[in-house]
Image (cartoon, rainbow, N blue to C red; front, top):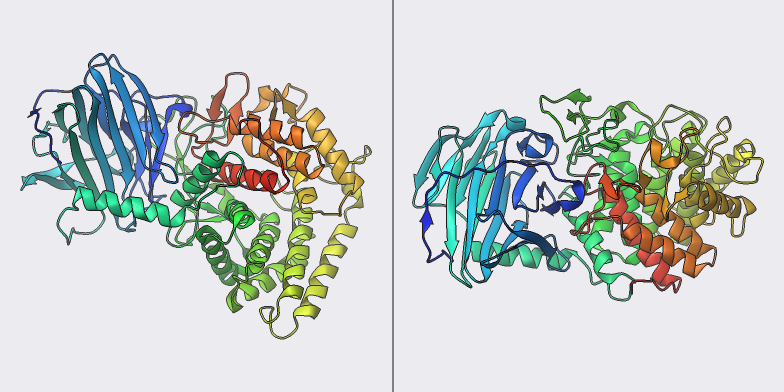
Length: 606
């Protein structure tokens, strides 16, 4: 619905002010995602795919963004998601009243066309907002060109992308290709803006805003399950929505929608996470499977199976969402987010990570419990198990993608995966490979036992697991095998590892991955939020429900108003660090909520 008030032209100025990460919200449609600042500025969006060059790159100090901002600079901001979706409401209160901007990327998604929906409403009193569209494809290098207005719609190009913007008939271009206008709304009025970005010509008329909003609402309600019965219901459902928003039609889920948000200010850890990691995909699938046979489980299995069938023992740690190889890491010509350098590509493509094979088997076994595996999936399980047998003696980069070692976590993860798929094969009436389900299950179990028998030198003198035979340090990832009863229920190594992590890797209720050196933990890096969720699950498995709830509550507090988790949390400064939102942290939150609910744990917050 158009506004009755005047859309007047005036020169407007918007500065793309960097924000601390906790202040950003996130919208996504499965094929791409955008970050929105508290001022209503969309500062990050890659089109048409997750790993495409950004068309809005102000997040990394580049040019390009799309702002709907209160004209009165004296405002306070807030916002919220509609339950079970990534439909966000930016909210601003001024002296004149309050306004909201409803924001979403339209679903169902078209892999070639991004549709960005924005609806401004004067909620209490009149509203006046400034609108600026500054399209800059190619990470800010390509300003909008060939601008034309016809029947109230602006059209043009930015690099190889075409765009169409409806609802902005009174916008005016400046010499730099930016379109600006001011929108005035009477109390209760709304104004719709629809921006389309495509790498192909537009074949259909502009979408009707009402129909597009309705289809988007229905699409979200179809994919995000009801999480009643879980502790932290709203957060668990929101975690599922984030995972769904990060998952493409191929089934692949990106680790994060962003690149180069530093894990430590001024440090060297600035990575591009706009790709699908095998490990992260499995963590998300396992979290979903713990709750039920929801669509994201099938998506994860489909992607993992395809990669195993294609690459077998040469399974790569990560791929693009289309299943392609990841390009080599290179520096972008952008200033970068404050404290970090802007990068694209990722060096992980050259690594071997043994644990990915074990996690793939865990995922396939979880799907088998719901009778969700077909012949190709069982073939993928055979390939993964054979690859483990062939390669478990090799050094690998491990879960933290470090130098090649015989990492304890990697091998224990393979033991977990082999035992899980053996149980699934033995229980399957006709799904196991060929007609030899029992014999195959026995072979996989025997392989798991052989690997475990080689790991006596991975036990620390104190009785806990250590990172590697030649690395006595503790590692929070060594909690994971115990959550799957590996080596076995009540094993003293599992209990000793749990006690050691609690005593040595925790600070103020948050958990770190490992100790880098003799410095205090927080001097080396931030707390690793996922590790806090693991420790909550471990405490619950040990029967300490109160402690489990405390670890869970502390970890789920490490987010901003939009409920988004980054990879790390700066305990001293209470800030998010790393790319945002980080998929495997949301998976960890969901998985922990399910486990603690099943164990009868009562969260402190309800």
